[in-house]
Length: 125
Image (cartoon, rainbow, N blue to C red):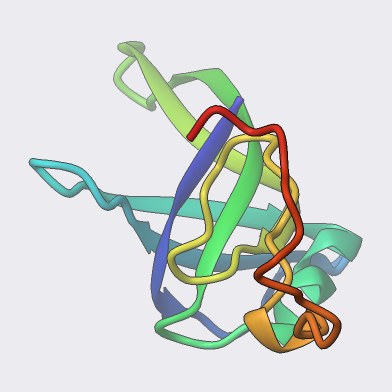
C-alpha cells in the first residue's frame, strides 16, 4: 500500500529499551477533498530514510499495516494498529501521476529556416 501527500511533520529518531530499538515518525497530509494527516512510523534502519526529506515536500510512502494484541494488568485484551513505512520517494510538485513521458520545452525544437511558401503540399487543411 502507499500514501501520497505533503510532509507536515518529521520527528526525531527515538531509541527505546536496552536493545536500542529505533523509531521515527513522519506525518503526511493527503491532498484530497478531505485531507487526512497520516502518521507513519519508520523503525530500525529505515529511520535513516527520512534524513533527506523536509517539511512541505510532496512524497509517496510505501507502507505496511501492523496490528498487535496486548493484555493489560487487569487481564483485558487490547488491540493496536500502526502504519509502518518501508520506502519513501519524492514527487515533483504538479507532476501527473500517469505514465506519460515529459514534454520537452519549446526551446528544444529548432525553428524551421528553409520554409518556402510556394511549395505545394498535399495536406487537406
